[in-house]
Amino acid sequence: MNAPATPAEVRRQHGSVRAEDLASLEMIRKLVSFDTTSRDSNLALIDWVRGYLDGYGISSSLTFDDDGRKANLFATLPAQDGNVTTGGIVLSGHTDVVPVDGQPWDTAPFEVTQQGDSLVGRGVTDMKSFLAVGLTFVPEFMRRGLRKPVHLAMSYDEEVGCIGVRRLIADIVAKGISPSGCIVGEPTGMQLVVAHKGKKSWRCRVRGFEAHSSLTPLGVNAVQIACEIVAFIARRARAFRDDGDKDDAYDVPYTTVHVGTIHGGTALNIVPRDCAFDFEIRNLPFDEPDAFFAEVKTYAESFLPAMRAVAQDTHIDFDVLSATPGFDTHGGSDITALGCACNGTDQFGKVSFGTEASLFHNANVPTVICGPGHIAQAHQPNEWVALDQIARCEAFMRRLADQVCVN
Ligand SMILES: [Zn+2]
Image (cartoon, rainbow, N blue to C red; front, side, top):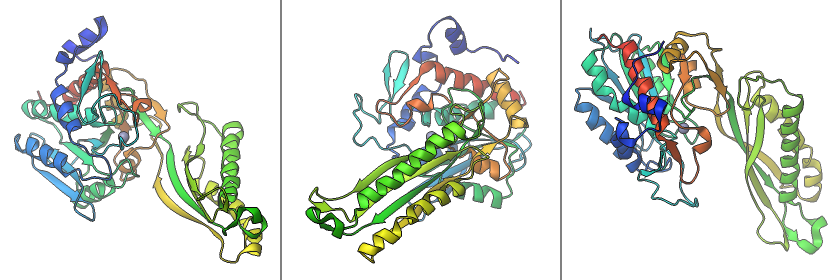
């Protein structure tokens, strides 16, 4: 199953990869140079990619958000027989990145800086390097001719709940495009991943009643009630860990729940009226997010009688923030076999973080995840990716070309 070694692979086996071995370095620099923080427009990047693909005679179709400030790009490299709809594979990734606000960066985040054997910059791991490698191989795919189409899918608003890609998928379904598989290039250390957990998140808002803090019995302390609910969630986290079902193929082999933010109160001498916190579950397929939520809600509601005995207009409300299903192919699919061939190994695993993979999977496009860098390096200040990982991604893409090209 070993495809011909590249210069970069040879270097990897005999020493560290050099930046000049990499075909995709300039493309990575280019994509990172666009500040595509999720809250901002990604259209400058999308326009640039569109122009790049145009240069190879490949047209792109865009689907926009409600304001027209952000777009998904979907482009098809046609098969040699002109087929653009049936079979083939999707190379998929998101264009947005998480904010750099408040993070202690030592380099300019929207420039790629080489430091030793790694590249530093926002998005080098999550996940512009995979997109850059895919784009770099477009001329090779076209030159060698394709047996089946290769589609490029680049989404917006992944980092805020896999929002954008839903429109892209709806659009390709509406156009009758039916790929036989999808590779999502989220950072997996170039390990093939065939399953990930689901994720659902909520905001809890506790409305109490203000009073002078010397008169606490006259108030309803929203911060303290919120903290009771937070403590309940922490107990559930321990129960999932200690008593829940496990799947040891995952990096974290049980369902996790956690509280990520909490805001409440205005001053120490005021019984706080408001407190809000955000929490999430990352569930294995056999744990149901809504069952967990129902437990939290029931527990929260147990405070209401005492709250309302002090002040009628007190309440606890919940909003759903995001929901991304999990998926598990159990390794038994053609796309897994293709991924193994491209990676030159039969090994595959499962991960805890959510991706757009489950949305393709649920649209009947069998999907795997494989991309350069590690999730632990994502979302960090000084986000970095090893040159070796880029080299492996290029080797993966070259073997993919061997699999899907005529010549
Ligand atoms: Zn990502």
